[in-house]
Image (cartoon, rainbow, N blue to C red; front, side, top):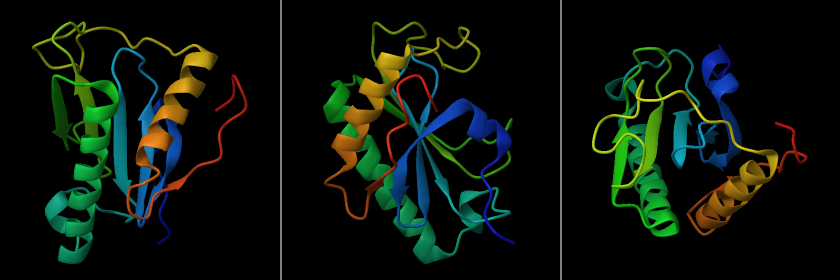
Length: 150
């Protein structure tokens, strides 16, 4: 069965690019710098269900994303989580947190309604993240969406 991104993830994110075997997506909530990694494996719900080599590669990619985001945004804390309560497809959240953010020190989920990016801010955020990931092993950026597009 070919890989298909869960519809909720597709609706809530913008493609940033790919690491080998893994999609890199930007969450559309502008309150927080928020990247989601999705291994391109159909039917996988849990990290332990991945073959060991794929699991190790995903962990390396996750660390690369967290490290790049921490440096790019000067984050006070990087939150990395695989929850899956709302979306059963395995995906890893990477959220740059700041002591001054809207939900600090609590969890971001359900704290506030999502704040949409302006088209210009979305383009800027995507370009910054693609640039930050460009030197990471195997990252291939997605084509930028037209201004105001997805």
